Length: 239
Image (cartoon, rainbow, N blue to C red; front, side, top):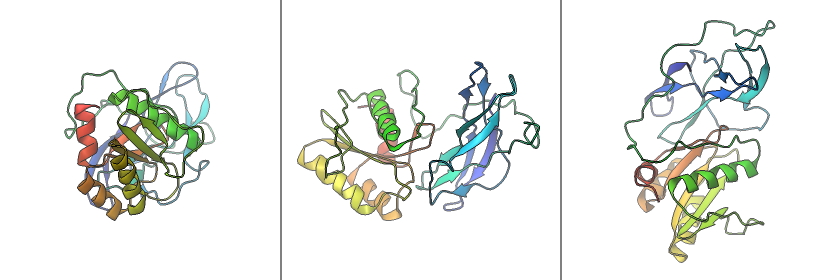
């Protein structure tokens, strides 16, 4: 079973219970990064090579690099969850995996009768767009496509009645980013959805709330998490 740790957001002081993500090892055994009971670190700068951790499979002993666990707080802050390092002998420095349940229900989201979402691991900016497209299709949007060349409007994904932007950069999405997406949706009578790896500036999130734009943050596992009420509602109702 995956380990869980209590996490307090240093920005808004909100408490969360974080469950370590579970991945399949090459041997087929489930693998969860062992979490360190230490304060989380807000992500203000990203590097593709710096967001991976070494984890040892307790079944076969294989060591591989996996995305470092992250938590998207509803306040817009993205937190890096510390992981126990692997020692020279390949074992975590302390403790064993917890037997607590790997899934912690989120009360703010309603149960949706759809199959489980299958994420796409994010290693490049293109992977981030692919993960967002798969998530939009999971929500019920049809014929979601990515332009071969990113247009000047910044819109990364389109579908009938849909425009979506994916920001894989190392900075939080800005107020201008949100307003440009909204204007594109307004001119085409389409719903607007925003995905970001680094979260959102405070004024950007406030404006998105006013405009009813769903905001999601993505970690490197490719699993979008809602950060505002319109995003929660979209998950509950679907497209």
